[in-house]
Figure 1: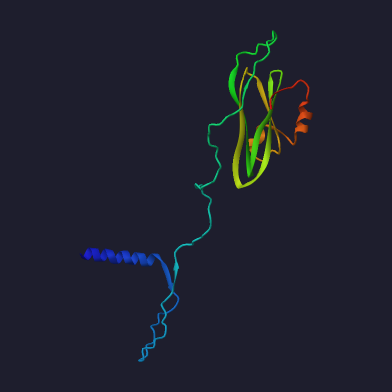
Figure 2: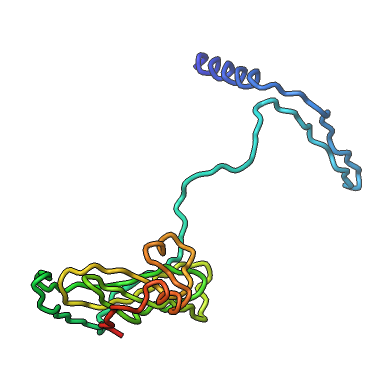
Length: 199
């Protein structure tokens, strides 16, 4: 039992001597009057020399909620184009194959509409011409993807995409060539030799 008391006294002594404590004020008990009026007393204050504490900020990777408008799948009617290429001894068009031709844009700030307006054919290439129009409904700082598509049943033809409208400032939108208006597009492509197969 004496050993435990000795050990406890040594531990308390080690704790007290590990801190550098300077008493700044003497303790003063409150003055008590017979009428039970009391003046406020003063507890002693101490400077404890222990550690410097700095408060600031640090950068950490944390998960934060983000609101993103996502696309949902719905069953809808889409245009279907069936292409029979002319028989030509110089060209072997190959077997027809059904595939989807789709255009997509990523927009912010306002809702937009993206529609495939025309598909032109020339040689063994298709030219898909879409129009991107800005709407009036605000989506704030969220991003939104808009798209349109047609199904085509044709031999394996090359497909080139052109969008009439202002290109939204997003990396996603760099895969198509944008034109300010249809006149600029026609000036670039010309009108000769094209067949409009979808309008």
